Image (cartoon, rainbow, N blue to C red; front, side, top):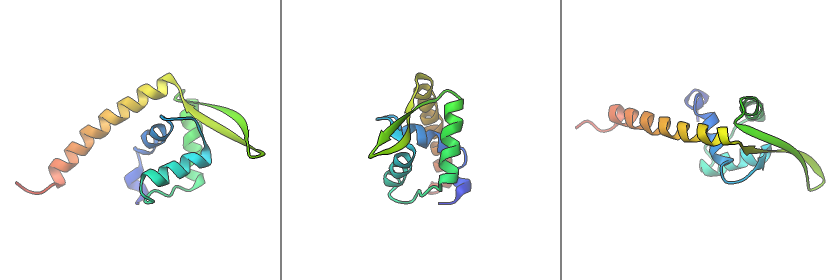
Length: 107
């Protein structure tokens, strides 16, 4: 997947995978890869700065926990993050409909 295609949509995708349950960073990366059918394989240098940025913006909250003897930061959506995810979904549907209208089959 071209990185320029993802620009502007990564935050919404991260918020979406955290909607169901809190996850640590590597689990977020795995969830994105799984939900994309393997097409989305983000480098850690892209994911972790995005997680920190979303947390600074108030969309995520994190806590340190120990999993399998290793300390990991676990992220979860805040109320503001849930509202932002709803907004991202609305914007995505409008954008997808617009692109489909232009790139879809000629009528």
